[in-house]
Length: 291
Image (cartoon, rainbow, N blue to C red):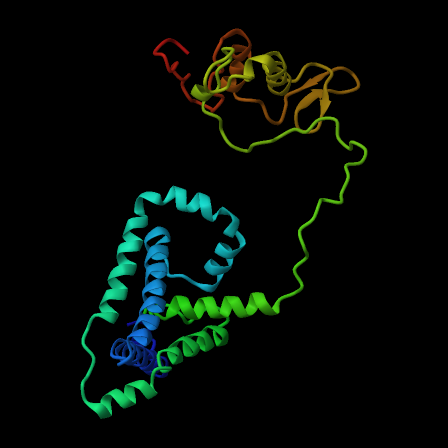
């Protein structure tokens, strides 16, 4: 419907032509007079449909070139993936068996002329795979969406396989050659520009939320007091007030809100750090007690 709304009738015609060719190819593959040819195409198309269905059911998207490359790069995690989705593997096996049965069990035509032409066109099911792969290459990775699942994963695999086979510039894995040199920093400070909920800051040693925070309580509370203290007489700080050469005190241009100043003092004398948000009420303890 999108191509109709955008009046892209040429794209719509090509899309319908690809679908017609795919359906015709499936019919020719399923009516092959020789059983081994039917079984050959049945295994390929049923496996492709199973892979496409499994990926769509897992990720919610159709299998694309970038998805295939990502899966190839993490192929060493295949055992863990099978273990994680082991409860749903029987669905994939059932779909594979049903797909093979649908294409191999139907009766084949008895007319000699039809059987002769079907035998001559045994290669036709490969044409949609090549065509979809060419579309993906021309679209630089796109163009394979909303096409039959029996063909689209095979085309994606063909494109990715050709790229991997022709790309020899990837360096081989090896030991890391870099060696650490002289330590350039004594301490690393992590600054988080977000409010921290008070009920997630617990000074009790061994608590389940911040078990190691009690060991640095004195340093954190001292930092709070130093940062939130009011300017003293004689301080000369830009924008924070202070004294001039005669010792006269000037009103600071900005003063910390009273709740933030009070929170620094409360932080040092209570087992739970109150919320430093302006106007916020102290949080209650998770056990139901006072903050």
